[in-house]
Amino acid sequence: MKKNSLTANKGLSLSQAQSISNLCNQRAIEIAAKFNTVNNYSKSVTVGKKTHQTVKGKKLPENTVVLIKEKASLHACQAFLMENIKAKELMLAEVKRGNPDFSVVVMPDKPNFPKLSLLDGFLTEVTETWGWEQLSATELNEFLEAEAFAAHIGQFIHKDSILNGLRRELPEIPAIEWMTIKEGEKSPVEITVHHTAEELLVLHEELAALHRQYEQRVNYFKAKVKNLTTEENARIAKHNADVQIDAAKKNNDAQAAYETAYNEATQKIKVIQTEFEKERQEKIKNIAAMRISVDNRFQETIDLFLKQISAEQE
Image (cartoon, rainbow, N blue to C red; front, side, top):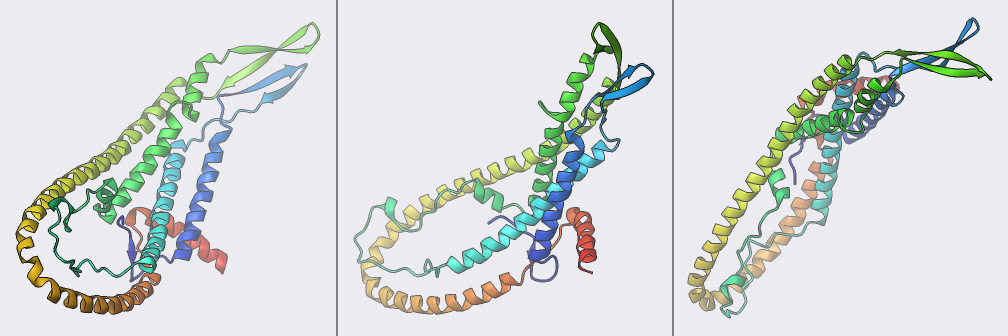
């Protein structure tokens, strides 16, 4: 299980977290809508003494970078909340479907000296899922933030993006167009360009620098997880080799210990079963009471929506 920010002390309830997650999503949609109709120019035509606008211009907002960063922050906050909501649900599900751990109890078979490769005690190689579980809650939260920023800034500047489209279109805009008002008579259409190539280049370079910064952090955590997984599998391989050596020695004593071990194991199973059910109910109770401890990087966004929720409830 990945690290989470659930705590038994204080923080957001799951209902608050879900409401804030929904509000984050709504606000992110609103921001995205601001860029859906952006273009590079407006068009107007003069007929007689009257000027008519044929294409309404809508330039990029002056606070484009602020909006894109806000959008990324909203998605990062939403990812943080959903990660912890799912974590609590998974914890409850895991406890409810859990079974007593009898691995500490060795139920002996009549010794038949099995092949060493089949002996109990071997460990299975781990995957990168295990590697992610080794990150701290702070590291995971930083990864979620970096991944969200890298993705959403990348969407805005890369191929087929809004910004790329504006830059590609700009040099192709003609200085003037002609419109046929009536047969045999044309009127000039004034084209007003409201972006410059320099402005769009500066914006692209600023966002590209931010994208590289967050992409580097994403790659750092991915590499760290790969290294942790490789190191753990090396340790497991050594452990399994040690198990084989140890098992060969223990086979000599197996027959004499069989009867005693069987009776003791049976009694231990009964005790474990009873204690397991008692602990299961206590765990369910504790997990149900858990709240989400807010990471400082998401506090400002969450406080904003908490005020909104409180105002709506008054």
